[in-house]
Length: 520
Image 1 (cartoon, rainbow, N blue to C red):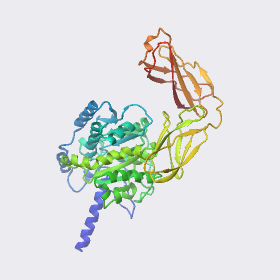
Image 2: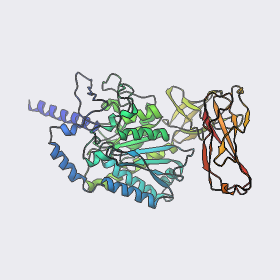
Image 3: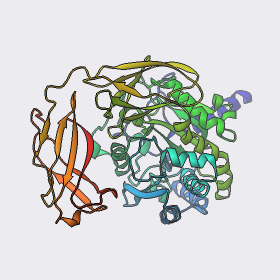
Image 4: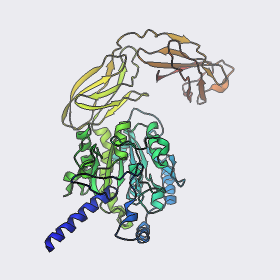
């Protein structure tokens, strides 16, 4: 009898710790069924209703643990100090503010920060839950290590020269300062995103400001991959996080093999994550571990083609500050190798038209995988994460062009595969339209529009100015504006182009041309 009671006690403890790490305690109505108790779009903070200690005792405990961690003010100073000493390879910017008005600061690390390049982008997000602050500390360790080791360490140099790394140390500064899981409204931010199985409040305006900031961020920047840092377990978690029937099961997404590979990159580079007895190889499918809904991870993949992992990086949700340096050493190679995997693995390339060599924002698909990514509109570059040591058939498609496909055997190293697509027919509207009412701010220049075969428009802007307009020298800003509709195109075209005149411009009487692809 005593043995049975002990066994039940141990199993309950295991279940409690597992559910607590994932984000709250849930009631099970029957075998395998999880009742997630939707309250709007979130689950309430369990820690404030737990039976282990009072709210006051819990707060006092976290207050003691917070000693040695950066306050929100300290974090902002650290971010600005980092940018001050590493401004040659970094910039900082805010994606919004928390409920209490704290800026959500991001550090971008690149050899050309703030500029668009034909390179993949990666983001790290820490402190999604206010009472899991380890990520915000380790992300500052990461940024400073890369800064100190650029051009010295090959891995740091590889990342800076080939990736745009964006780091948001704290998504939930209010929850951190209030020493609780949710934000200032007591909302779990990792239950506040649109969900594929159970649509709740799909209106962007009804979401928390921190959630909206992330959603708007991904509208501005296309991230190839991402990871959020959590605490309470030691495992790399991958999609799907939820199941359609709400039951605890392995629920794989189309890129299950690629996600397992990415999760393994982190776990096997970690000091001891891959040695886990609870999670084989230190990785887990989220729904197999414990289903959640409204999570950020699945939303990234579904809506923005961003391969996101949820990284539980410490069994202790709030480790003592004296452990920070050790935990950084445990996670350092994992954090670096995960970012570097965007360059070292997968397939990368660009897509061009065969007739004029224009970049095309084509769709890239893999036969047998029901998931498509898009090449960028700016450079037509794509970055497709795939599990290595496999055969793949890669397909590039673009409306108005003949699709092309190629078969590859992807090894452990990355491959470059460029596509050149042939137009199906000549678009009947292909013509040159001169003087289409776009004007420079002082009305001394014009542009030329040329229609591209297919449902896209190439905007060729030619700037000209007479000798007496000396204010248009090299390095000066220009801006073109117009509301005119090009002939044969029903959709109004914004003729808006801003930039800086190149240094190659020497004479005030000259012309320059720049191109841009636009959907019509």
